[in-house]
Image (cartoon, rainbow, N blue to C red; front, top):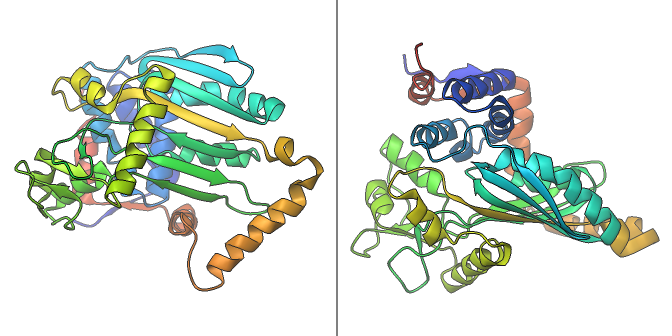
Amino acid sequence: MNEPVNLSLAEVHRLAVEVLEKNGLGSDHAHAIAKVITAGERDECYSHGVYRLIVSVNTLRQGKVNKTARPEVIDVAPAVVRVDANFGYSQLAFEMGAEYLAEKARKVGIAALAINNCFHFSALWPEVEHLASKGLVGLALTPSHSWVAPAGGTRPVFGTNPIAFAWPRPGGVPYVFDFATSAAARGEIELHRRSGKAIPLGWAVDENGAPTDNAESALAGAMLTFGQHKGSALSCMIELLAGPLIGDLLSSESQALDAGAGATPCHGELILALDPKVFLGGNVKANFERAEKLFQQITGQGARLPSQRRFDARIRSQEKGVFVPRKLFDDIRALIPLS
């Protein structure tokens, strides 16, 4: 049978926890990761959903990640908090640092959370959506492995280097965008490879620097930035802000640390939170109404806001569950040790 497997969101979460715990990951880490994997599958972001369990287990089995790491929260300054993930996954580190970040933003107006020495594989919208749920404006960015060539080049230097932003909206879902500065997410190319599908031209070049629509050749060559020099400049900015600024690794250094293991990238993450109430005082309501007018000017002409597809998928998944391809489901179940 090749029919997709229909799972409830609770079943997705239980599956993720089981796979991770049975491969030696500490329970607190497993639950934190399962939460974001379930959210990715729920929102039909398949490259960041249950597929990521395969990548996570490979990382665990390579011995790269500290399976029982306890993140350390460090109060750096009135507007800065740092969490040393101690070479564990980033999700638990964010959960431990998020409230400190929010509290500092409410006191000062703008605050930063630096997560160091973390393995990060997930999308960034879970972080910024969490901040938006608290009435804060959120911005997050992180490097990865050096898979992406700069504009005009053919050899990898940058990571996929995503950036995410969230603006809280009264009575509804936030305005959110989250995108890689590469032309596509690495996981999208990997999913094309798994399914034997060609990738669009413009996503990558092969080992010789020639444009390719072959996923295998793309993974062996170099990915490309979106918007040529514009995406390249943004990617470099993210390298600097989430690398040297917070004392953590560049994508090329993360790649070197990996030493060919093919594990999840290890680096840092920078998250900013801004409190509109501090910036605006008693004028929050009036200015947020102005923001709503802007959104209406966009949607009123038939355009859609970013993440709307995700939010629509979220409603479907909450009602009907998710549908995982049979082969992917079998591959994930096979990750659970028999003994």
